[in-house]
Length: 188
Image 1 (cartoon, rainbow, N blue to C red):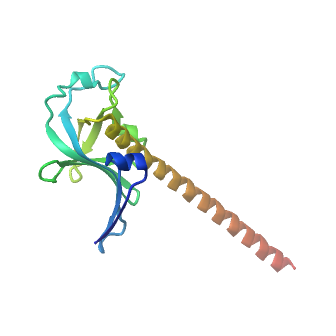
Image 2: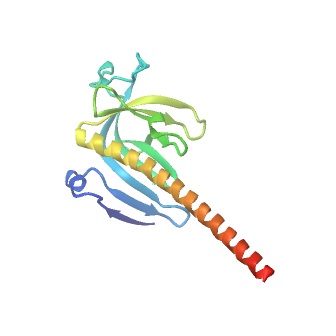
């Protein structure tokens, strides 16, 4: 296994929050890229949303979290995920797959009363059962970097889709030009 690490911004590097880590082993088709990692965050059991406006962190008991976790935002090919790992053991506690064909806010929703808390739709990979949990960060900067990493994954998917459309259009144009040239050559 080989890996390479670099920091995308000096400010993030100074805080020690956001790093991009690329890891690839011989049996993987795509490398796993970690675009965000935070050693300390908290998972909460949350009540159902009381209003259509969204979840409020002040309705959670933020001093009583379910588990202390390490948060990672990862991507492998076009698949992205938010991984919540137990802070002590490092074992995967829960995973929030990021959607490929839907807006990311369908699975990651900021609460309406704080910039440090989010609601995640976590899903069991095998059974596809899901649950909603709260995620909270101590520092506003960490929450901001988390939000940016999730948005960047969505932006990358959008750029990849646009590039694929451009390639297809170019290939159609080239095929049409080749067919026209062949027809001209046959007529001559």
